[in-house]
Length: 360
Image (cartoon, rainbow, N blue to C red):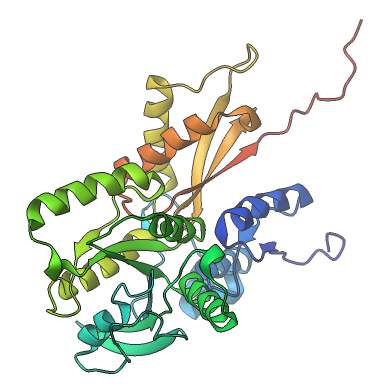
């Protein structure tokens, strides 16, 4: 391809999730320029691909007037941006343990008894997608089967239903984890929240069956504290009390889902990122390893959905995980990124003198 002398765009496909994002960095080793992390299955990274096409083929992609005047398109990465496309339906998956009230909640959102509900757990078997227009935005809601621990799942049909629910969560942009407020944050709830974070989806926690709670103010304060302690990987996620029976909190739940979608699509300009990084490194530099200082040179955000950052520098392989968490929490607070997972990758600069023999 180099000998052909043709314009070249390097695409790292299947870049969804943490492992995919880290694996995309390995494509730098090909020496074909910056790879475009892409997930064709999920639709992530398409805006980066379009930007790469504009940059690689400026004359072919520029409007006719611009071709005549300048013949190129100026792409500025110094400004903040967003990958949000309000013309596309927002996919919202509602997941949770069995009998948490997911189908009842979806019926309340739709304003009609579209889905089968009842006191028995396990009535929903398939991930059911329904369309909803809300405040001028098209939504696609997915009601899913209740998810129990694998050790308790013996029925083959329930296994298939669980797999279908997880697949709906992976394809959604926003996942609403509906928790039973009377018995909140059990182990399965925390496992599902961690799964959503690992898959890189935006998370909203709905505190279901809120009509059964007596002391609501004190309970909400306590649950927010527990959520911050138990789920630090999505710190600041919205917690919305909701009841599918009475309709309490349904509007606020949809508002939270749309707000976290905006955060999930947010892109931060390179100049702003590095001004912040300069201050952080001056106040809290990374620790030395084996007597040698770890040097972080700069940072970029090549993509959003979720926000994904790359650190460039020397000896970053030795950067402690604790310092990486410190940077992620700092990014979350400084640039207002609550409720979404933050991806951080490292790119170590090559040493041009490595492998050379020292002169006597």
